[in-house]
Each structure stands twice: as C-alpha cells, then as structure tokens.
Image (cartoon, rainbow, N blue to C red; front, side, top):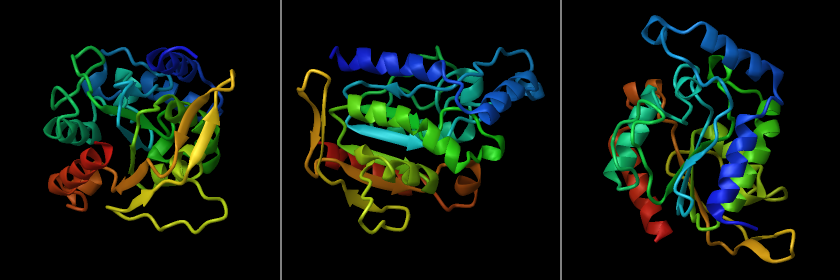
Length: 245
C-alpha cells in the first residue's frame, strides 16, 4: 500500500494535474493573467491545490476553495490571504503550526498533528463553486481522508465544507439519516465505516472514532463583523485537541 506520506503525495500530484471542471480551469488561469497591482510581478501557481500538512494528522481542517489571489497564487491552501492569516494564527496558538503567518510556499510553515485541505481545489468565481463542481472534486477529499488513517477530528470551515463532508462516507454521510443543520460549534460523532485496500487488508476502520466539528468560515467578512472571533475558533481547536488525544 505504501506509506501514508507517499499516498498523500500521489493524491497531491493527481490534484495538481486535474482539469475536470472547465469553468474553474478557465477562471484560475484568468485570475493569474489579471492580478491586482500588489501581485503584478508574481508568477501564479494557477493549478488545483493539494492538501498539505502532517501525514500523521489527528485534525483535518476542510475549507471551501482556494482564493483567486491567495492559494491560487502561492500554491498552498489558505496561504497569502486574510482567511489564512486568521487560520494559521489560530493553528499556531493551538500548537498545530510552527509559525503564525504564511505568505509563500517556501516560507517555512510546517504543521504538526494537522492537515489542511478544501472541498474544491480550484479558485472559483466569486468564491462560489457550484454543487456539480463540489461533487466532481469530492473524490480528492475522499482519497485524502482514507489515507489519513490517524485523523480523529474533521473541522469543517463553513456550510459548504460541511455539505461536502456530509456527502462522503469518510465524513459521516448518512444517506438515510437526518442531517443536522449547520451551526458553529456543531459536533457530530461519525458512524462506523470500513474500507479495504486492494490486497484485502483493512485500510481504514472507524467505529465512532472520528468526530465532525463545524465552524463559521474565517472569511474576511465573518471576522470583520465579529460573526467569528479568535476566541470562538480557539475554543473549537481546543476541543479538537481533546477529541484527537
């Protein structure tokens, strides 16, 4: 089966080479071709973004999608935008990140015990992927969650990420069950699930051992209006640490 790190690296390569969604493919290239003045001299990544972090992560943070002039520019999820400023500062306070700020792919940021990813891997127009684009991209989130066998807590940033996770068996989807309405602080134990590798060995088995947590997305609007505060997010990360112990 290979190591977890090797599996995640292969998933990352598959993600970066994806062009399944024509609208998103065109938009990420258009954004790179028309940068704001502040990034005019920079060369954009302009490809789908892999997840990144610790292969032995206990916590998986799932966002919405890369920002057109954030991750789409830098090549790393949540790097170089206001949402990332909020997220990495919080991860640093909680002991998951070695530094509080991430500006570029080679800025020295490393995560310990955490993996950061998103429901959709390309920057979408107006930060709004379509349901079809979400579902097309779902396979990559599924592959990551299966590879991250040590993960015990999935933290959904916003209702879109919650919806994406809900639809995956790895994220707690219950096709015949009642779905809880998204809310900040929502905590759901995930149902038992079991997947086999190609050789028949158990690759991942959960029996209520994973928990889904929900947070408002750390968007600039949510943070500036006070809908999401640093104290609120720190409390969730403390709970994630407790659940992942």
